[in-house]
Image 1 (tube, helix red, strand yellow):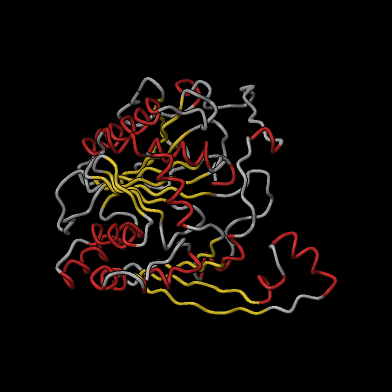
Image 2: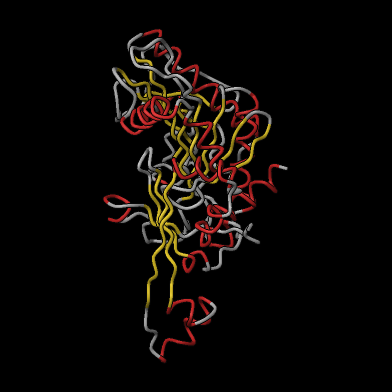
Length: 363
């Protein structure tokens, strides 16, 4: 029997209600386990608990849902109690946060004069320009510096330009050193996401020898999945999410409200290439974050198959982008602790609600 209103707290029931073929597919990728947590609430706390969480019973008996990706071993712990905490859309100004756009000390205000350049020079677009990173992660590690100071002032044209310039940077780096062929782009938006400079910018890398470890782990997991099940992992990952209502597809691009996220509101985007539809969908997800969910600080990661032939197989590996919420800009508390670093992700948002918001926004 179908669940009336699916959410993360009843994911086990949603899976149990699936047709047998969809259930078998879901369960070969994901394991869903539940546990009951109990807490005794002192009378002195009851009014506070009721105001914050709706009832004492909600705290006294808590259902925890543990979702494990059996292929990649990504894992998340969801507690409906955490999801019950109100999340409202707020403008940055209502949080008392304003970006310092005065330009004082802004090395990225005139990057051609105040940043190093790569051996092949700079790649310039209408809305951004590249620079060599002064303290590099890797041999090929550059910056894509936005012309607009405020990273949240983005349009489709700007997002497309950032990607195109980053890709051209990778192409030129590869031409300079053909053994460097594994592309990775990250955008840490504002300080909660790890950006040390407010001025909008992304970072681009081109690795030698092998892709970065987490991407390589994903490639190996997908290859192992193909060998074990004679099926494409990324297609089945989408189908598993779609079966429970946590995915959508638009103009050939697949979008997942991730069921085993690293942190809250993680979205995975799968595309056949860095084409216009991918850029449009990425822009739409970013505007959903900013305009519907009030997410002002996020991490974006983007990877592609290698720029040239490799000994290892990349069969079926798509362009993949990940976006994740990094929390309230006004909060001094970190959103990542020992559990996320050493154990499993602890999540306070509901992928089902995220999927509903995405579906409405991208309609």
